[in-house]
Image (cartoon, rainbow, N blue to C red; front, side, top):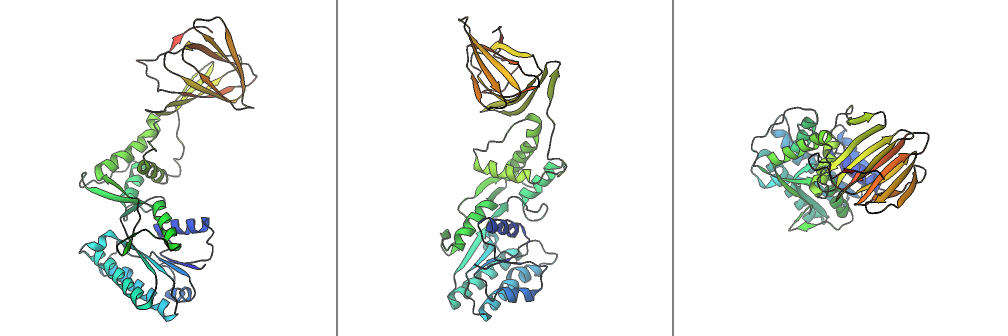
Length: 369
């Protein structure tokens, strides 16, 4: 199948090309504003499907709206008709097409042209009135507030919030791609005469800014966003794609002494915290018990011995652990426990605890195993 993608270097175009390639569609004609129009004539001769994504969002002159959103569409359809090519055409319009502004009028004109072309030539068309899109590879300070906020907040730059209560309807790029692939298969999601992406998200502008600021702060407080919320998960993925390339990594506070180190890695309000414990050879850590706090130990390097004793018993239970065989050891409540490095190198243990450490309520009581 030969697929023509106009606007191939734009935000949606780049994501679409990547996903088409993932799905095994490798015979793709790419057309962007940098290409000569003669190339479009060549591609329209034998393409089997058209993703018409090219358009103008922020021109220097308002007349460019019509040139980019109507005239290019007109030329594309004329070339298809000239070649006798009845390939289905998918066009990305906008919810702005319902509004009486230069951009909206140009989008509406492109829609009307496509509907007429479909009726006159018996060609399948898919018109998507898209809301505000967000996701990786979008452009800051262009046509998506999410990209601008992610880019600026990641760099400690100011952001502009004209009306914090303004409601936004957002659509994630991967959800758009899922729907576009359905259209390619001839099974789009329809509403009246228009195609639609069924998954959208609503948020107020001020709340959006606060959520993204929270993403930046999470490196300092070690929190993890609530990815059970699908919108937060998508937004966080988008934010990470805007990190400065020299700031992918960040330091953690290591609590070091002559025994080794203890470093908190992740803290969550509902899933507890994860820490990394390093013990020098011969060192014993622990010798305490908890009422409610429970833990999981996973030794990833070195050799260790985990010892337990129930408070009302003299019996000691032992588990030998090693980075050569990864296994999780649960630390039950009511058992005093310790972990000793019995190897000749550092013992590295990933430790999960069901609640974040609270110095006011440590729930930790010293007692030798």
